[in-house]
Length: 247
Ligand code: PEP
Image (cartoon, rainbow, N blue to C red; front, side):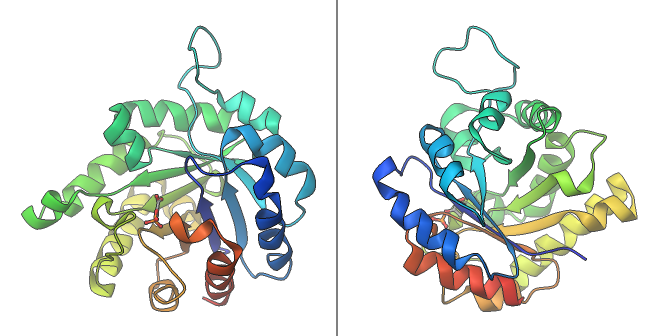
């Protein structure tokens, strides 16, 4: 049985002074029937992880290497040291803006797992891939190439995030989300066997909000959400957490 997950991605937003917003999310998460993960900027993970009780803290990226001469980068070990339990890898903003490849993402996933972080591995097609009808091919390649060959299911979370739905207010149809999530489940089972493949949470991400969460989370293989803009405020994130907890 997969416990639903409500994950927030704060991207490059969030200062120490926003801790009251996070405490509101933390308080509301006390009775939530889902795991709540807040992926805040790494600069505030340490402080926030000390004052929250009901949510997991996540990083938004980690380096492929353990440590070394990589000015400005952050390692999986540093995130763990700061108080994170999770890390997003392969977000499309990193794939697109920093040229991250599936190969990089597999290495990042591996090093995250070695450092006792659960990895939220993002995959998703562009609008032109969707229009060309190649979505499932793209998803299959990203999935196979971004995940290590040996994994423990509970330590991996897959987030399906169609790039054209991120921050745009657009969402795929229920049929489109169902098709991709079912496909990911079948691929995971084929690659890792039934037990592991069935144990991995598959999150939907891309303009999830309080209005569409109920319908999206009712889909069989949607095990939660990865939420950007709507996770920045307790007022918009808490209804999503509550809805995901009921799914
Ligand atoms: C994201 O960036 O992971 C995301 C889902 O953003 P938004 O919810 O703002 O579309």
